[in-house]
Image 1 (cartoon, one colour):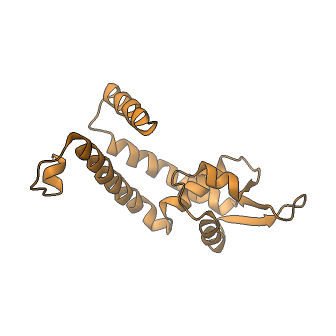
Image 2: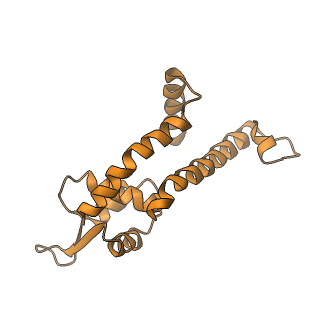
Image 3: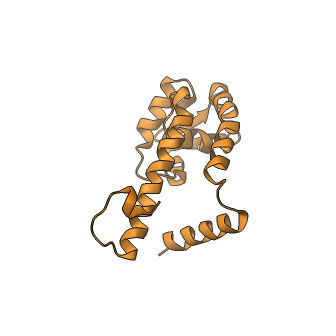
Length: 151
């Protein structure tokens, strides 16, 4: 369905406006569907992102700055996200012994277990969302989005 129909626009939209609205509208759909996958685990997309970053550390601690740099949503309040994960016992947070101003965050076994349970569901979700495109179209879409983002 065309974006004009989705948003029930009655005015003529420029191509630039259509592209921006399409991306924003699609992003909202992706977020809604991904939140459905995460809901049974009481996780937000941003919390999931933090857990994935910490798992990628392979047992090494990460500081708040490094987590923030690697976040998909750069505007996320990393401290608040880590606090919520701490309450759920999915991460630990400690003061760095070498630099008391630095906070080190580690994923717990419980956090790793949640990700292990989520992994196949996330893969299934991603595959379902891309199933109507072939490999060539997916590569083209990815290349165009990267080109568009790197203005």
